[in-house]
Length: 208
Image (cartoon, rainbow, N blue to C red):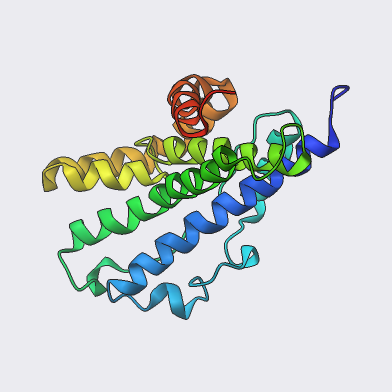
């Protein structure tokens, strides 16, 4: 903690809170538009961070941000696929992918701000915008990992034949969260999602 930088910590936290809020809101609005009233009845169809932040996930986010990592999660949006107006597996895939997709879109939008040169290099707002782009790309790739409770587990299960999907869900229910925590604490997650996130970041913001 001797190299702790308050400014960098706050910028990382802002980027994470923004990314997670938009991510969870996108799950909620997608389910809502598909006919499931559950997210709206629970107050999740909103861009208020207080509706989406999870106490443990936020604490993990703050601790990891303090050491320069920045990993956390929001409060999962509860949905009932039986209420979807389309095939439940397709609907669940749409709702699941809506979260990561929103992070990719957010990264692209803020990358436009970078390319437009709205803020001069070295300016605090310029650094913040760069943080938002990179953090949202990390959230995009992070949530596509096919481990429970991440969105990638839903996407993979919905792509499998029903019998295989049931076996996969049983496996994830028993071991998924432990595997997720193990990967997060071991640093393996960074080696999985870091390289693609950095490549897309360089593509979006252009040469330094």
